[in-house]
Length: 270
Image (cartoon, rainbow, N blue to C red):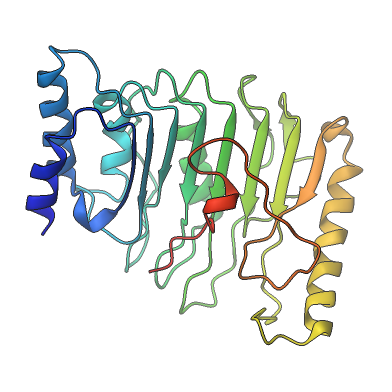
């Protein structure tokens, strides 16, 4: 059970990488693990460097409860992946500020979509507002929206007039509309986008080749528009696909961290 697992973790003071389903590390349990590690290290921050929490879970009073505190609990984190997935509606109109991740280089957030609802434009804007302020050394931000199982709600747009911290050189976005001109201030070297699949085309291992061609064509048009955006001059803009997409030309290459696309499907499906 979750209680036993957290007690076991309290003894693992030399752990550097942890990938765990959310249901095994509730807020109180993970808080106790961090406190135990700090005590056994004489008050020094735990050495945990890479943390991924995935799947559905209950996070304190809000779906972001654990994420809000992880910077304070685990001061040496360099990569952090977290999904606020829930079964019901989303209420992100006023999110609390996150504690500072002093050494974080890669933040991977998502899927954002719940079982039955998509994030709104305002929801996405609020999520970006709190996350862009919490990590002064952040180099890569990955935001994966995902798609709800039962909804006709539209997928969100990236906020217009977005200003990214100068430290961020790579931005990954999936199931989020990215319009030319919406990113107005940045130091990006690479932008990877995955067009929202809202056309009814469902790509499976048995998909017809024409379905893949149509989807690829839509993706190419989106990428082409972004490559012509003067605000993104000098940025490498790439289309990005998850392994579930049947794309022959796509390949996944290791990126050198614990959340690289080579060992991660970028999805928190159960």
